[in-house]
Length: 97
Image 1: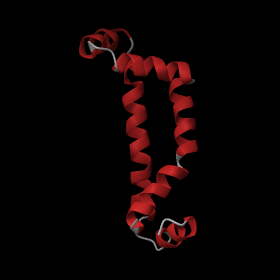
Image 2: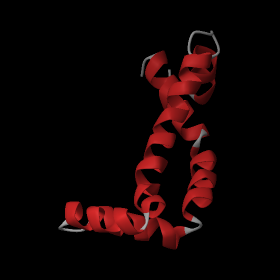
Image 3: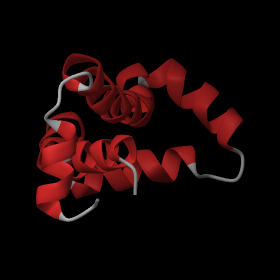
Image 4: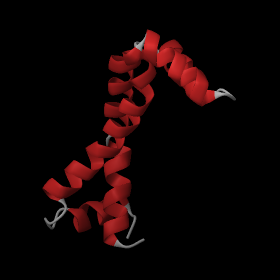
């Protein structure tokens, strides 16, 4: 594994507690997450989203907001810290190099 891949891997693993806290903040628990997942995974998802969007905009946009925030967090961290020399020693310490 090269140092850049190791750095991305480490960023994702380190952020797991942040993802769980962010999910609890957005969904309120596993029930809210499963409800949002059910809404987006239904067979006629476009019709369901149109109908739900008119009734509950925040409930409909919870899952995409969560996914975007979870993807943006490591990207922002990589842009902030990616050019430092911390990535290689950290990857070596974990044993990924």
